[in-house]
Length: 462
Ligand SMILES: *[C@@H]1O[C@H](CO)[C@@H](O)[C@H](O)[C@H]1NC(C)=O
Ligand SMILES: *[C@@H]1O[C@H](CO)[C@@H](O)[C@H](O)[C@H]1NC(C)=O
Image (cartoon, rainbow, N blue to C red; front, side, top):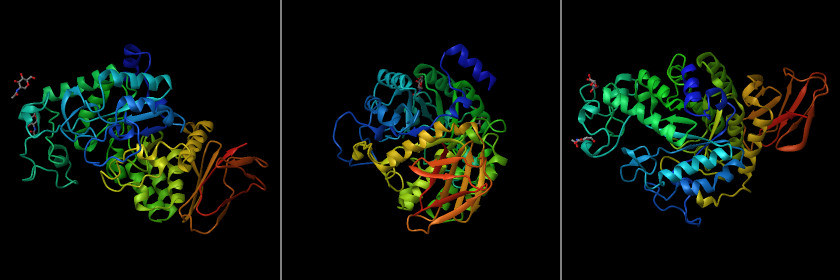
């Protein structure tokens, strides 16, 4: 941490720390899918190939993102990719740009424009693998010694047993040549590459792909070399396993909140008890070094969208309220605000232009209100305190903000609860951000919260 700070002071006047990232709210895009230069709302016909998104077009849509209340974006990996690598995870040349997304100049311009609007940019980076049919064509790792040999792997050389950590680290994912970070050339080159890219484009953070497939010691060096905030993808539901990657025990300041993701899907899409959510929050506080810096999400490019599990918009709202206001940095996947409901990859990677960037969408306004409440209440400065829980209701506060959620859905019964454990004074008045005339007053130390038709409520002190 101290080293990162010193690097920031020396190398640039603008450098975001973990502490500063806590107040941010991230909007995740797939560069290829978010905005294209030509107009029109016709759908992309083949989601398995490039659809035409670019940095230049994304730059023009920054206000759409900013007006929804977000102040950070996460973009796809930037290097040149093997054909059809529209997602960016198939790099075959680290020294060249992915020409489909635009030029170096256009990417520099994107970051510059974003910074002028106080939007931070997090770039997705990959250190686990490269991708090409012929290793000698990969730049700059063109020798077989740059990759793990298959000696310790199953006959297929693929990861087959995900509970075998050595196999997960040394064998191939989806048949991609698996970099050997122990090789001095690979180790040094990956580290200097990430440093150069961050310095050149002035990225404010990195999102690291497939963290659990590379040894922790390497990530420690890599993150230090990058010199900025890092959020790692440890795609696993096991809390103690995932938390082991966060420093000081592990090697990076933040990881994506995968265990909570699975809990939220269980609770809000599949009707599990709200106690499950509460238990998850309690376990998080015990297991992670710092819960406020974790990346909280309900949708992403690797999981079927929430609405493909359950189409109920009220349940979706409750999940998003949890994402935006519980401990952590919210990460909202593009298209959430347009009720995108794609299933497994690539169906969850819809082109955005089909929505015509409708800022009148109910969910666009809903998310905007949540970002507003987050800022207004400065929730990142306050611990999440449970105020009430039962099978169908969970309420918590962050400072003066009271959040009430339910898993009953739009067809569910009216929920009425009396909250007596709260931080307010007699006579205090709280109003619902979604319906400003919906206010409640503390009377005889009690707050009466009513949720109709499965709605969630967020109250601010007036
Ligand atoms: C690998 O790359 C290096 C440097 O870019 C080059 O000198 C060498 O000829 C390449 N080797 C093969 C097998 O292509
Ligand atoms: C990785 O590289 C190191 C150093 O070159 C070597 O000793 C080791 O055997 C390699 N590991 C695998 C699995 O290929």
